[in-house]
Amino acid sequence: MSVAETIEIPERTRWQRISGVSTLWIGVVLVLLYAGFSIWKPNAFPTRFTLQTLLIETSVLLVLSIGMTFVIITSGIDLSVGMVLIFAGVVGSKTMEWLSPGGDASHAGWGIIAIGLVVSIAGGGLWGLINGVLVARAKIPPLIVTLGSFGAALGAAQLITGGVDTRTVPDNLRNSLGFGTLLGGVPDLVVVALVVTLFGAWLLHTTRFGRYTYAIGSNAEAARRSGIGVTRHLILVYLMTGLLAGLAGFMNLAYFGTTTIAGHGTDNLDAIAGVVIGGTSLFGGAGTVVGTVIGVFIPSVLRKGFVIAGVPVFWQPIAVSIVLVAAVWFDQARRKARDRK
Amino acid sequence: MPSAVLEAEGLTKRYGGVEALRGANFQVFAGEVVALIGDNGAGKSTLVKCLSGAEQPDGGRILLDGQVVRMTSPIEARRLGVETVYQDLAVAPDLDPAANLFLGRELFRHGIAGRLGMLDRKAMKSQAAEHFARLGVVLPRADVPIGTLSGGQRQTVAVARSVMWASKVVFMDEPTAALGVVQRERVLDVIRRVRDQGIAVVLISHNMPEVLSVADRIEVLRLGKRVARLASDATLEQLVGAMTGALNTEDDAA
Image 1: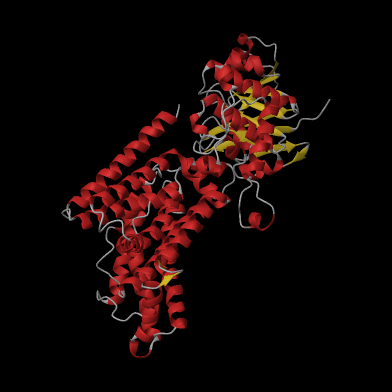
Image 2: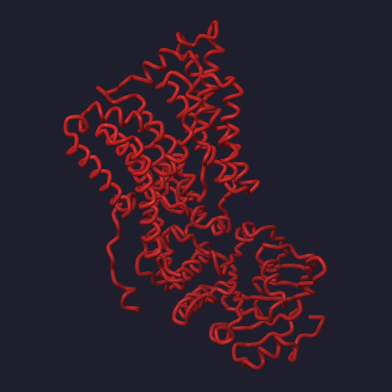
């Protein structure tokens, strides 16, 4: 036994550390899916247009999922993200309408748009703060807290709008963030999602904040005993998720030109599925941003591929669910093999 | 005679109707391992909690290096140089050994990267390797989650962490209770090395052979008071006798 303990084993490279073994496998799955659909429908699938719409359609969900990654790594959960998104879009657009002459924000200038952005993000942050304080201070289980804010945020949005979607969104906003492109064809929405993703990766994998996120999810008691402010950290994590949902709400507003109050009902589960497929464990302590990105794109590619291939729409949720359950099963098997008592 | 690093004088502590400590005394000197033993309900846990800041005594004094101190929390105690290694939940299983060693006291990079909160992983890894080597902590791999290592290896890292920050006193509350025989020896070896560094070690244990093997002195607690102080050449009969009340070598005024 002592012989085995002194064998030199090469250290893993930084890339290996960041991505981890499970990420490699889902990366392969994503590539295979893309290749598979490309072979199946070579004229329709592997096109620039398909790729662009795929990226655009996934951008908002990706922004939500970055926040969700942090939350799940702390072994928490946030079911409220879709409704906070709607709430943020509502308060942002209502503010812009209120600041515009005649309540018509269609011709609003950049100043009003900027205010709308700030209000959206703040609106999201408000719910994030409520979630965080209830989870971290009142010690109510995150599932229950965010289930509550899921309903309350939607209710608040409906109260504010009377249940009617906003009709006027600034054209400037729609033409820039909504439909605009940068650097010869990269949609603005995708750029925003990319910036958020890179920030999330930097925060999670290089900073002390990221390490504390892992530590708290791995063993909150050990973290507390080490002097880490667990309560404060958890509040910040939920706050960040709320702020990102606020940004996502504004992005959604720009893209659709309306508040889409009736939609986003399953954004929370889509985000959770993306994060979990990406290799983040629901039990906390493990996960990567790279994994989340791949995990969010797998259901997206599946859906897009099915639509292009003409597969009946009802197969999509079944296929996505199979991938999700398989991913969690694989993660559990890996954990069991890895952990020792 | 050198003065004790940590000393308790006449500590009393009451939980509702139960008197956990009734004028308990305790001493530990630098560079020794003192075993604190006693039957269940003797007050060991309470005494250790009071001495490590997790609880405040109702009466009596605590002296650190001869000065009276009031440790209002374990974090406060840590600042004064008193650390505790717990039996369970001591490490974060998903983090690697170096990350666990520096948990709560991470090293930042220099310059603006550091001010933004970026960690200096390389420095932490190399310092961890040095520290482990000095204490005889042997790990097969240093870059894997610590949960994949054995219980004994995990506990040695927990012990190493407690001494990393120039502590004066380290409390070890049944550190080997969950471990097998070979792993236990490994942890005890690390404890001996910790003692050799000049740190005062207080070991709480129910395992009499382990106590006799690693302790330099033994203090016995019974019904909230110290009833005996024994040397490392004590016999099992003496230990058990003191714990059960058959042997009492302290007078009430001590």
